[in-house]
Image 1 (cartoon, rainbow, N blue to C red):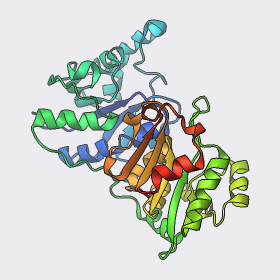
Image 2 (image 1 turned 90 degrees about the vertical axis):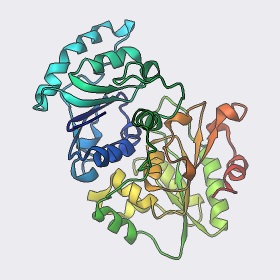
Image 3 (image 1 turned 90 degrees about the horizontal axis):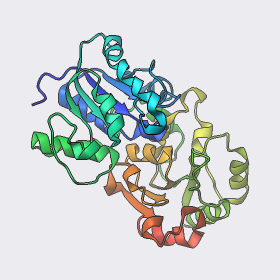
Image 4 (image 1 turned 180 degrees about the vertical axis):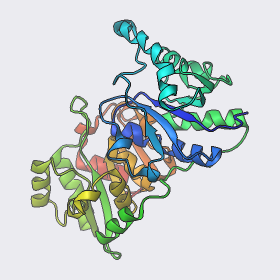
Length: 340
């Protein structure tokens, strides 16, 4: 089964940076399992991450197919015109100079979307839609796992093997690890803070007063509060520098040409631990193998990094619906102090 696999396509319906980062463990495993030199990738949204901010990942291992509509394969009654996306199948394989893909992996669960992705010429097809019944080979899997984990679980069941998931990023380019090493003192203890959310319509951030109090608490415990915050958040950065003792912003001191998610992952490897909300940096910390306390609103744990042994997850769904933005410093400190 899955013999002679040479061409693999992975479809990701998400358009955010975190959506691309979360599938890197799948890429890493597929490369080793099937001994392939390139993987084809369809990602919705304007920003094709493996063509820009992640272009250095594994020497360009990911080849993004980027001539498709931004909402490729999204088909609902409200988006009836998107059923025309069935016509793209032959164009996709032609653009890759092949007749069909040996394997297509669809990471999302909408049946209509999956049917469009399945129309792309292929030999094998994997999709968690309808509990993997649309897959070839078919396998009924009732367990609900996170986005990355359910794909590995399918392979385990179909191939009858136990997979050691490569949850941390492999082969991080040396220029990033060298740059990160310049930014940290060996004898200091660093605790990371990832506090900004990428999507303005989704409230999920700590209040500034709360995070300043938490950072000062750990500063008093001889940690260096290390903030992973983009420079565009200038007002927050200024506020933190004024009110947090020993606040540190390592990315702002790095070589400008190396400031991208791969550098953040390299920085994550230098941290003793971290506190993060649900955002792209959370996935970078996961790929770095950083011990991280992550705070989610609602029941969103399926979006967490796959390496759960390095995570402690707060979910408002399981904590009397007390949302992240309503937590005070004592709530956060009590949740993380036995973990950090």
